[in-house]
Image (cartoon, rainbow, N blue to C red; front, side):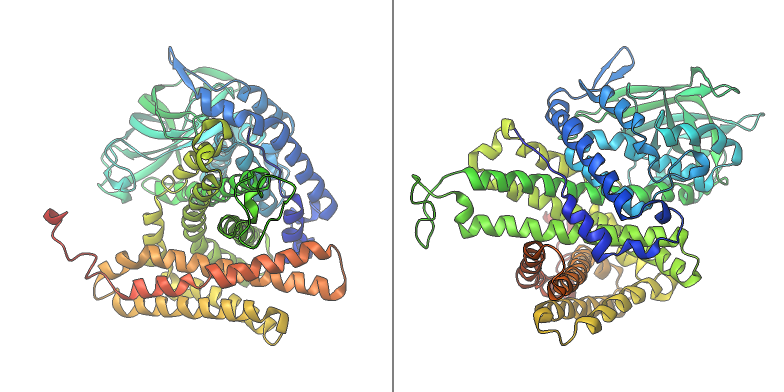
Length: 596
């Protein structure tokens, strides 16, 4: 049976030592989460995830959801677990206090979400999507809509969804056919079909609040004619109680490769009553509030499955006896050595460990910029936060999910044949991780967004701000002998990233295919540089603690050794990505379509 333990020591290290979130104690939300409170919250989250959610992970995978007579039922135990989630106040963790939330920092909520996702990714999607709906309404909804929907979305009594995809269109939302017909009372009648709707229907909450993209009758074609609507499963009466069912029904449950415990629905809208969110024909502006938040959450999912797969692979590698060490027996009293003595097993485990810890730091650093964007009193800091969130969201989503899936596959490999047997649970981690590379914008789209939009946005202001962060850290660690490997590795990665960016600036405008052909390599180059940056910050902190004789010596030494592995074994891949980018599009596009 697989298991999971939340890496609480790593969270404490990142939050309070590397990121030093306590320096923001004067900001809203941070003031309510000093170190002792934040740590206590995460300890309780770990208990809930480990004791309640993780044991349901294989249950959800085996049972899946069912649709009978128009009613969707979640796997055994999910309803009880969701009730405990609500009773514990977890959905309100980072929501605004004026709507019943606790108002705690986003960076703390990100840690909570990783814990939940690692324990049970399918379950975590139900409250995760609700927060996206909450954010869209909070930022773009009218006061009336906020009063109706936000309080119960915040408590978790109601859940939310986002409805974009249709059978004939995915990323190209300008092709959508779902229509909205204005009514005399200011509402709209929504008609159409949406597919791949995660948590689209279930038995966990009393009402489900759908955020639906549709085209108002008579609007122009293309993405500029799309608007966003709130469409509840059940209409809400004036007193806040539930009225009759709305014109939305579940046509089918998708049969999926993974995340079986989450209800992925085909939703049919038949003159369902909806209300406009934001301005007419500006639906994508409002929906992007949900999508950007969801994309960070999906990057988190890739990391979470890498972490839980790694943990189980370590346990198996310590226990499984197979062969003898190449340098002589390490367990002479046993018939064979545990496979963790073999260098290739160590390579797999070290690669996953270095990714997990560096990727987690990168994710939390990005989330912290999200907090500063909304809470800092300094205008320049808020602008940098906005730039960082825009620039890094596709990197976090694309890179963490690509590598998270790859690590789950490698962790499965540690088990040999047992990894292919369902009982051990490794196959589920691989299958669940795979969707994270696809939904909320497939990773190829994330790469195009990064190269095609984010680099040049505001005259390259965001990437310049990132460069400044890297340059500042390089200056800080320069000349420290114990950190020489980090200074060298980060400096080399940074130089490769700058050269790749300059190559696009010089060549992509004359042939846009050059950008497309190199976009995925650029995203991975950026991701590696981001992790190199974070590992250098981690090493700087660990070295300082060791020099001061402060804290757990073994923990900090392990951090330095893991970081050195990343710099020596993984970071040099930036040069490979740069070489591929420089080949351009000619060879990629050389064959006629008929030649494939």
